[in-house]
Image 1 (cartoon, rainbow, N blue to C red):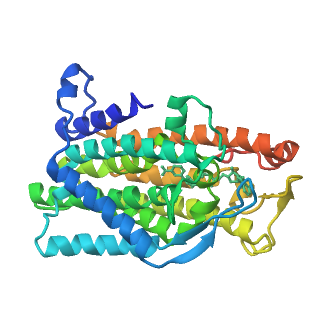
Image 2: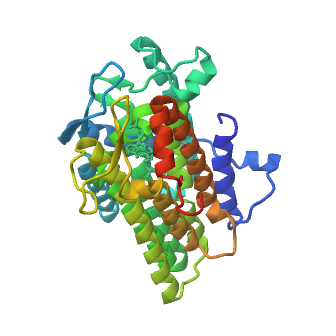
Length: 395
Ligand code: NDP
């Protein structure tokens, strides 16, 4: 992962930006195209992290308790993301309106920013490694330096009230994704004198996705990442580099591809995205609310569930009675809608959907193994009751 993933981000960028989306055969020549960090990129990224960290620490927000840890204690999390998200968008828009920065700034510095973000994560992960080792808690460490560096040495590394994982899961990555998209749209306008409907659709769909995350920010507290995944290079790099710099692939592609879509296609794509969103959001919030209050009605009826001998309840009605990971299905439908906006000329903009399908299938299997280990026969009963993994009737 350490050796292959960062080059992949450059490869994708080079294909989309310099070869109009064609998949070129990687040669040594591509290495020469990897940009070095520039002073401007380091300044932008430094200011970015400082702004997000300050907003996270200084702006008040509702406090939620996380799920119980292995020692039965619960951590407290401040959820001010909704406010910080809109504050950031307004600040970005204001800085452009006042002429302090050009709207295309993130596009213009994309390559050096990618390198800067990569370098930052490699260094930050050293700090995370050391913090975890110092904490003294034994949280799934292997003792192998490289594995622990990648997978993390601590579940919840904190510096005072700064929770590194909770912060990095969203603020510097997800919001950056939205700003990059806006910057790409500005570039399209600068180059072609228009912002096309596909570009507007991608911007709107992905804005909805990210805004929704912050609207339901506390729901992250019952997800796999927060509950089970140590915070090391892998998760940190995923959140800070992979998400903003590759999830923007469709908008990057559309800068140079100014096709329009027939109205039926627009309606179809909006419908597909909204259907995916309804399933994704419905499933995630049902589980979250159920875990907080098992009495709460689901689709107007008392929830059905299996009581495990370990204590936690497994929901078997609503979306969780249809498939064991309906939330993944919703996410995939949205991913497909985003990719379809780009047309059918190149396969590259479909990278997100292909990669995401593989990731979620793997993740479902990993989760299945963990839950089987945790809940034993109760999990088997649950799997018999809810037969399908992700796509009812198919998988
Ligand atoms: P889930 O939110 O599905 O969480 C899985 C955990 O939920 C299990 O480990 C188990 O934990 C609990 N659980 C499983 N089944 C039930 C049930 N029937 N009733 C109650 N609890 C249950 O997984 P993820 O964290 O993987 O995904 C969260 C969202 O994030 C998804 O919508 C996914 O699509 C999205 N996602 C997006 C990514 C992106 O890059 N855009 C990447 C990864 C995920 P326990 O029993 O211990 O509580």
